[in-house]
Image (cartoon, rainbow, N blue to C red; front, side, top):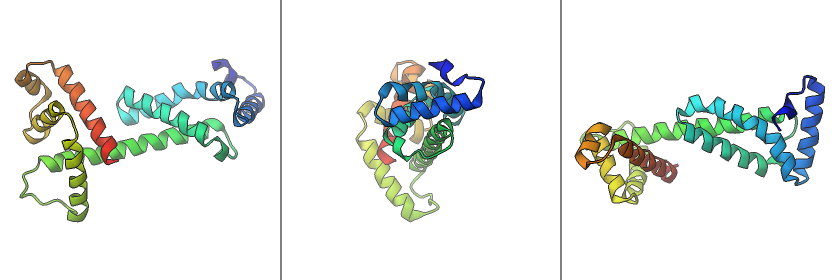
Length: 185
């Protein structure tokens, strides 16, 4: 499958891409797979530095594949790979923005209540949504978030306090932040 786009003649590669695209639009799943498979690894390589997380980069690639499949009829002209990469990069940028927003919210939540936040209207709504999302987390996740963001403990300190490994705490924090990102997105 990978060799499909390693054709040295650009016009032959474009013709193959057009043929696969037409068959994919006609509902042929295997043509879409042949079209998308060579692009997936390259997209993962493009978005991984943006996400700084292999699992998140893989999620972005999968979401880009689904969006490309769902919106194949919207692709008009140009290279399919360019369009597909744009979908994935946009997903990564959105993820980075969500992560930064979550980090700001968690930082704000950890502040003493007498510290003012820059935009009170936005902050009130964001904090309300964050508090609801945090309250929906499992008790252990809430506790680890409390220790990390309100008390400012490092992962190793939390692990020692709870009698577990730093890796287990990092995983709990990762899952809790992911659930919070999904809840407040």
